[in-house]
Length: 469
Image (cartoon, rainbow, N blue to C red; front, side, top):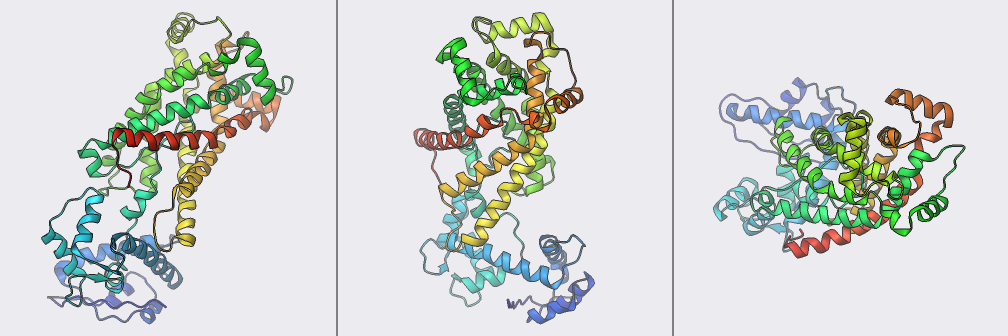
């Protein structure tokens, strides 16, 4: 059983720890796992109250506003594991103790520069025996009742990074440290991510075009398979036709990434968090809104990409010719066909993507993280691939409806339909399976896209002088 001894000096009017716990509805059983002699100074009590409220929020699994015995024990065990990982990452010398130089170096890695005097002040707040170093017991006893929802040293390894680019609308941008933003290193990350995305999308473009063709043309009466689809494309336009639509797909990476990143940074300030790294629900809100803003800005390019992928040989001389003809025949509104299902698809994609990623991350940390918070490349790629795949699976019917709406005018005799009527038509004529046409080539491209992105991303970072953590 975990046991904690805390001592706070008595200054002015005080309230005991037991009285405070009882006033918050915490059970008397907590007394059995504490050996406490704690009195809170009146001028420090408001901060102390905030700590206790955070503990209740962090451990309250059934959301009843109270922390029962099992929830508190689970919180302590989980929090102690995280603290040990952070202690290991701070202990650069691997001698079981943390000194001022190690604190300075670790904070410098996170983009925070402090003086040796400031580092020593931090040490003194935790150092019980006056050695000017902190061992594991001192570190744990000081931090165990200070809930930390986003430990920076762990999060840096687990950033949901731009390297996981599978050619879809990833909605949550990278988190960048203060140092990366001040030194301009963030734009190098974005350039490296954009370059990696361009290469991976180009390599998997034939599968992407096949997916679009199957989404629009495949049906019960026209069963288009993977081999048959490739054969049909090559027969109609040669091997070069496999890459139709890829130019605009690559071209939209830069504006979409830039707008998404700038919007994300602004929205982060509006969601009310003063932390460098947002909590999971804050990332979902900020990432979804940033994705919606970016998608709204470049959506005409999405329509162009679909029309270019579906075009016949000789139909358009290029992207500009395609845009000019759409504008002349269908008007400006044509560039926003499918906009509503596209926006609606962002929420399930982002929510499930983040939820699965966080679940896999926590499962790995609980089971395998013993001496280090660094999961290694394979684990990161596997978690990112699985979470992105689950997100795509959840939002795929909306993506299919969006693509069909974008393609309406390019199909002979196709009537104008709304999102709801198109859903009903697909379900009536093709069944639920019809909402997942093209899913096979979409999933086939995930692993090669992620692998290619990672290799190119790492090489571009070296070329641009970006230091890996």
